[in-house]
Length: 113
Length: 111
Image 1 (cartoon, rainbow over the protein chains, first blue to last red):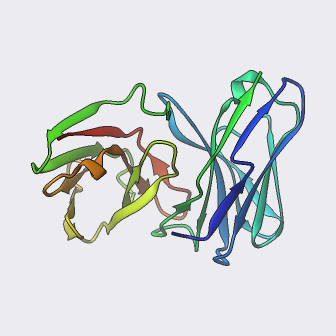
Image 2: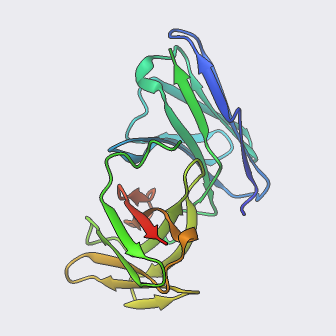
Image 3: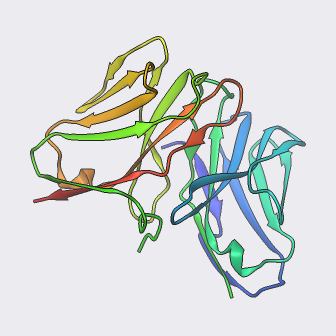
């Protein structure tokens, strides 16, 4: 398995509170991604990073921000959580884009009450 | 349990039979394709990939077929086992952009 960990693995929070999810890799891959997975939608890209301090938006980036200060860590922040952000969040890594496999972490299950 | 599969098409097969899971992709410019397996409560796991200059690629008990003319991808699993029960989805790479994922098919193996 690719060396990817996510923390926390489960979190329950209240509407309006900030939440930060962490993805850590030991593979020294350049690209890191945050997805959310919901019934009927499959995996949807939130944000991705192509290097330290280099990030770009995905298709569902509203309400989320990211930061990457080190190659191995990619943080996803919900500034003010809403119930619509209840989901399972996956981090993924790859060596590049275009003909490059992405490897996924174990996921974080977030419940916003 | 995992709720991601609530609205997915389901394929039920007898243990020992072969399974065929299909995927229609959207972008004719896509040149790389991946199949993932996702078990309940876990992250997607890479199974096999194929580049657009190939029509077929085989792995251990799995074969991926690519038909670029009709933008169709299939995953064949030989001698399906209970441990193959999972959600399977394809992903396409339309060049130098992030992967685009299909919604998936749930495979249920009947012992």
